[in-house]
Length: 594
Image (cartoon, rainbow, N blue to C red; front, side):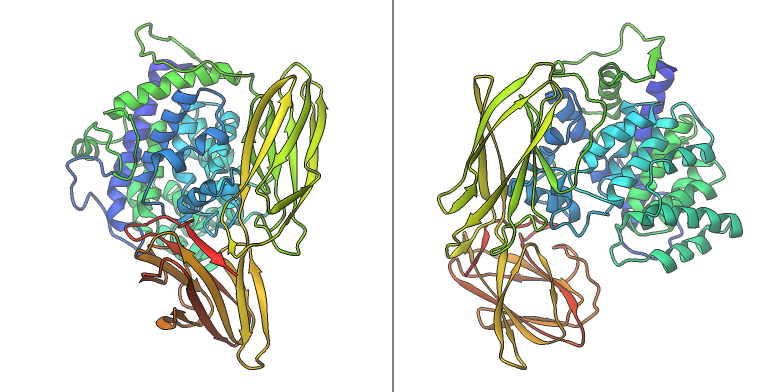
């Protein structure tokens, strides 16, 4: 299929103008779950409002232009270490913490992630659609590489749905056909697909978008207002109810509340692709053409304007079409279009990008190395702590050699090394067990080095895993005492009265935030001082900028955190430490002690 380049370029610009308009319109209403009555900006801006919806896409494009093709979760993970610092809400914070623990994608989007079905990936779909216009299959493929860094399940399905629709919209304007295209990429039986089917049926019955909104919340409500199933159902409903009007589409999306800046931005972007001339000047004049990023984005050399950003996308699009052998290409290419520096691709693209969610991609050259973790991910004393190294030869030459496993002295691996011989495009798995003589401190990063010799070349790669936290448990009714090893932040507390004690140390004495969330009734003490009490069944959002959080100043050395539970039935609790300020980051210098 051929796309006219100038039409494509106009659609790309309108996509990101529409995203900026919708995001700016919705920003004042982000979070509250009530119905709004929005018809225009309030307040009227002087420029576009910075938003992570656009920040992250600008960053990913910079990574792509610096690193070259293919689009890889391995490189996109740099976002959480190099570019985004100090303010990492929800799934962003989890991914950042996992990367600092040397747990890489796609496992980084799964492990300890209560926000795996948040909106964080869905809001990044436009870049991948614009890089694969008219080719939904390719758009979905490269969007998945992005999403798996900090999401799983519905969180990945959401970006696949949107990327497919937005990509198809470069060649198709019929909204119903676009929705059908997106639905093909949702697994049957998944909560999101069920919600979409219900939304369409309810709209056909009532043609009242506020009434359908009520039905969505009646059946699919959860306490997290960034839940992707609810918000994408609102996006779908805005598309169904807008009568092909840009104004109605973005206003309907924002009026349904919840993650209103994201829903408004996504709807605005899609309509920009469908009809580049449909965004009125009353919307575009206040935001201008400047590309405005959030202050927490660091180490960026971003374009100064939306136009420049779109020129970079168009340049990369040509490279991606060629590299991935897309069935879509441009016609009427102008000779004077902008060109940029970009590394040559290192290898041919594989046919697909399969992965298991229990694995992490460690490197992709000279061999592709993945590590499959045990179910708990963290080291569990007395558990079956087996890791599998998955080697793949993606080249057209045989690869043979050996690798050894390097760890700290108190970590014993059996066996400690393997030999391999891989024909072109062949793969093999090697499993080893880990036993650890636990010292006083349970650490957050056990680094494992895989030292390879391949066809005479010496090279290495590494990954990590955390120790489970140990809680000393006392049944306050019977006096029974025992220890519980917890692989993450959340754990289940049995019915009755219990005291859970966590000993920990802090690298430097300072004020931090203690997140004490869950559905359990709890009273929390730090070093013998009562700091808070939480009733059962309160709103449960396991984050540092919303939910139950208390600022505390632990000692630098030994600290004792005690949580007393009194519950009529088994309930979940969530305990974690974060930095102070804005959304903050998860702390990895808080270490559990025996």
